[in-house]
Each structure stands twice: as structure tokens, then as C-alpha cells.
Length: 466
Image (cartoon, rainbow, N blue to C red; front, side, top):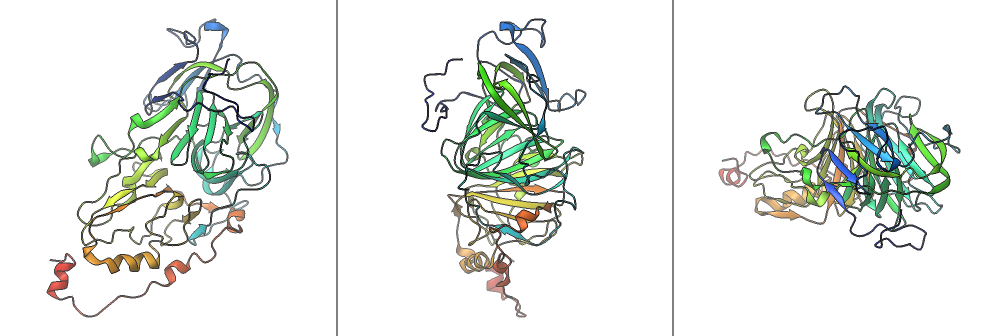
């Protein structure tokens, strides 16, 4: 296929994505796209001979008999089918920092509050696959129930290979450096401040147009992300379906000798060779697709009189369980927003949670941590481990008193992966030179403000008690 004129060769050999990539919008829609008009069959999915001599291939994200409202699958019409490859063999050297089975043999339980400083980008050539490493998780990819939380640092694009995750869906949160992601459904440009979801089984390539890149990845086993129900909020708000973007069909043809498919299966990596690009899909239709979302489009809700709302009101996507209201994994953000509650401690309250919370920071600062929580860093507060604002944040907040007035939090984007499963942590994460051994010190300075004196009438009015 000829490259569009808007694409140019980059100095490092990358083919640049055009600045005006076309997308389709919506969440959970049944999409269709053709790179060549007429490439989609009409009236059926698998005709005896497909238009242009293409092969029909279905990719299923759910069982065939899942309820219609939950069923996810897409039909791909490609130059050669994906089955045309040599047998898989274990990738060597093995990747020793990927986990999909969380048990006592490879991870440990640790209820302590944990925090990591930003990890430096390696000097040696490292692509997205080699730069991916697991921090914590729970459950099992083989049992199709659980999750893993990874981070990545990379400095080079993937070369003559594609990645395929057979274990689960990836939700990628870049923190530094754009990602050019080529998938079987088309191409996505993902910048810091955006997220991308790459569903289980899709083959993809990550190019790094800006060089060094760093970010976070949540992986869910046995389920898929969906928009949360809005309940009493009503029909609108939070993340709007129209703001999710899906790629349009784009394909490569021609010979690619020695092209390698790297498949993650049970947390282990396997290679298989083929002589063509996996991105040879000329047309496709379905509802099982990669997609991206710009976090700046999120419509936050907040309390407008008293108290601090639960973080669930900031849920962008959720991977549910069979138990209503209980998530295998929620993706929650803390975006710029107004704080207006009266007589209220506005930062997050001190808390012990039956859910476990992994936090990251894309840019700016986080309202509950005045020091130490940096862009590219992370923290983990596990089930029933207490956490909340650090000493400096608490003292500064109460010092402002009730005359603080409305305040807008700006230039920030923090997020949280939250799960009801208790995580086990990888030993390399606990032994990392980037772990903050003094994290607990941020709360040690909290002092007692207790007084036996009963508030007088004037102070009760000022504190909203009357």
C-alpha cells in the first residue's frame, strides 16, 4: 500500500503518523472501516470468496454464547490470515520481570504503604516489551480472574516484531513521550494525558517518536473494561462515550522476512516467525477493538456544599466482577477541578479501604501529597492499610480555616488503579533503588490537636456546627 502524503520518514527510520489520523468515535459501538472501498463483504461475514481475495478472520473477546449485550467480537479481512506463522518457541533471554500468576513462589504479601520515585529511562536500547515490568497483582491469567499492574520504561521503537497479549487487556497510561501504536484495526497516536486500551489477543507495535518514554499499565484477566453506570448522576457526566476514539482501517502489504510475533502467554513470552506484517487488515467490522481516550475530556463531579466525595465519582473505566458494585479493577482519575465545599477538609480524608489502591501521577502535583509523590512515580496502599494526606498537606489545609473560598486545582493529572483483590508485590519492586524507604515519615509528623475545651458558640458557627 502506498503511504499517504502526510506521512514522512523520520531520522530514526520510523514512518511518522500523520497529524490528522482519522478515528471513529464511540464506546461499545459496532464499528466498520475499509482502507479500500468495497473490501467489507455485504450481507454476510464469511463469503466463499471475500472481496479482493481477502481472508475472513474473526477475533473473539468473549465466549460465543455470552449474552448479546456483553458479546465482543470483530471480523478482520486480511491479505493473509494470522495463522500463517511458524510454531512458537520460548523467547530467550527470558523476561524475568513479568508476572501473571500471583502466588508465594514469585510475589509476596506486604501491607506497608509503599511509594516509588520515578524510574530513570535505561541507557541501553530497550523497547516496550523489554521495558515492561510487573509491580504487583492478584489472581491468575490461567484461571481468567485477576489483574496485574506494570510499569514501563523504553527508549527505542519495536523493530520487525509485534506484541500480542494472550493473558488480558492492557490499559496503558503514558507519562512521558508519545506512543505511536499500530494495531490490526489501524493506528493510534497516544500522548501523555491520554490512555489507550489494547484488548486481549490483538497484535500491536509501539513506536516512540519522542525517544525516551515511561508510563503505567493495568492488565485485567478474564473481563474487559466498560463505562461505569452513572446511577443518581443521571444520563451524562464523567467519561462520555463519544470521546472514545477507535482507529480506522490501515494496512501494510509485501514481504517482511523474519518478522516476529512476541506472544505473552501465562506471563511468559514466546516467539513465532512469519514473512509478512500482521497489519495486513484491509477492512474490519465489530465491537472488539482498540481505543483511546483523552483524559482532559472527563467531566468531573464534586460536592458543592460539604464534605469530600468518594473517589468513585472519578471513575473513567471499570472492569466489573459478577458481584454488583465490586470492581476487579477501576481506573480513576483526579483531574483539574474546583473545590468549593464549605466547612470542609477538602483533600482526601484519612481512610482504610477494603479495596487496594495503586496510584500514579502523569503531571503536576497531587492534592494529598505536598512532597515526594512525583510525575512518573507510584504508590500502593493495600487492603485496610491506612493512608491519607501527608503532614504538610493537613497542616496547610487547616491553617487556611473556613475562609479559604473556592479553589481550583490546576495543572495536575493523577490516577488510581483500584481493585477488590488483595495484591501481592514483586520482589524487584520491593528491592528497587527507586522505592521510597522513608515514605512512612510523611505521616509521622501528624500531631494531636485534641482539646478538652468545649467549642464556644462562635466557633461552632464558624465550623458549621450550628
